[in-house]
Image (cartoon, rainbow, N blue to C red; front, side, top):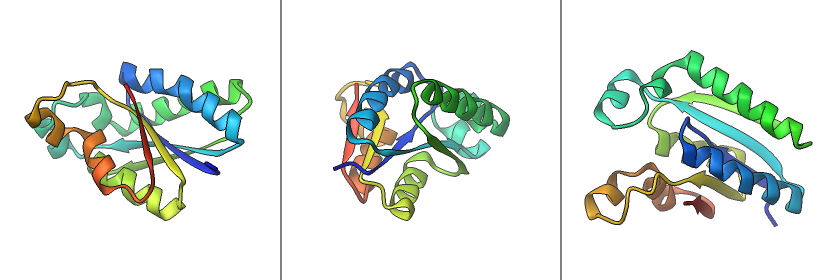
Length: 137
């Protein structure tokens, strides 16, 4: 059912929490897992309230290596991708290029206030994605 799964990560607690679900999902469906992290351009990172570490290629490389080790320890082979740009657009572009069946990502849980919803990466991904999206609260 979910042959290819894309797991976009950042340095948030929500991403780490979603990783547990991804492990179970990938093992259950024997899926191919790709982990993606997006280096935000300095200008974009300053405009958003995101983690400033996400604009550092070195921090992203370390994050991806840590994630790869976590999944490898669970017996899951992982491909990692690091790209630069606006997270929601990059996530959807990569999902389309790889023809993934599912995107799994954490939600920051900013609430249901209208201004928060329109600015969230997860909401943008839901609206732009070429495949189903599973948001883990």
